Length: 375
Ligand code: GDP
Ligand code: MG
Image (tube, rainbow, N blue to C red; front, side):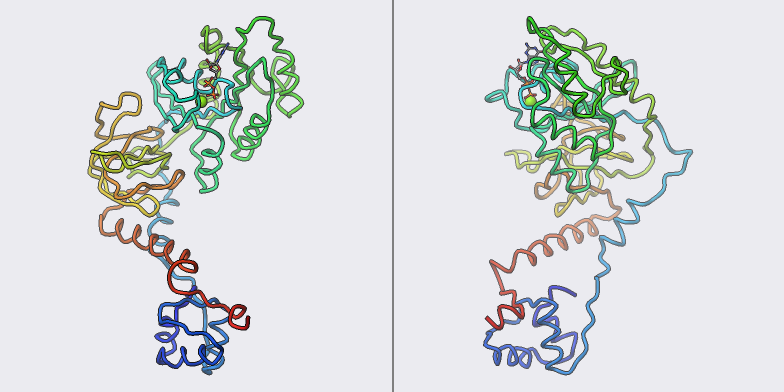
């Protein structure tokens, strides 16, 4: 198993560590028992010792447990409609946060420092008895970071384009992110309240970027709107619901939950507060959760829109602020509910150990390779 420490090789080969260290010393390296060696060097030492080495991919608890959870098929009769998850993307200052505020009827923009969204916001609202979840990100970094971890929490991307500015560099990036995520795109052509605006210019930009507006015969819905006057907001919501209806998003609320952490931090008096979104199953207070290299029993959950509102369970597509994890997980880390808290702890600790080993080279024991051996 790699990276292999002097002790690992000694134990696997049944050869005293001293003997391995002696060979390394002959080559000019003083290696301690916990120093790691790469594959080439391990093979070199093994050859010197006259033993054969085989490197094994360890079958981890992660492989066994999480793969089975991830790949568990939901029986058709347990599937139920779930709210769509809608993410706002676009160039800075084009109005993502303002539009979301307007849609959910709150005002966050005016409270933001410097007008730049600092946190990922995720809310669920109800419209005609059905839920809709919205995610507003500080920038694409968050979206990219999450996607890099394989997190695909978005069902529909709202590409926000300011009519006075048109398609800008971050708009283009947002388009490629949405395309890579293979989610439908709805364009919110915002700021049409600005006097003298010609929306056709931005529409031409869009079509030059492969997003042909439906009113020009393409398949992209472009909703002209203004977060300031509220014009077009109903239209935007209707369009989003229509796209969502077409896709009939479903999940199984009858299984234990899995989902994604959007962001997390240590908050005084609360411990770690993690904003997570449930993708499948139902998350309950008391559940044992592992999320990246953090774990814990869900102590409490709070509504993201009304932070004082405690909730006992959260179904598919629901964002919640979760209390009970021991350390803050990274954005985009998947979480899983396990039967046993000991398993959750073991998984989290194994991952911490892996991370520690990976960063050891620079900080702890030396990572010796054939190259630095002969330097
Ligand atoms: P974000 O960076 O994309 O989240 O953009 P914000 O929502 O923070 O908006 C940036 C600025 O544009 C703020 O000063 C808003 O008041 C302004 N703004 C947002 N929407 C509109 C709109 O529809 N019309 C006008 N005139 N200004 C808007
Ligand atoms: Mg914003």
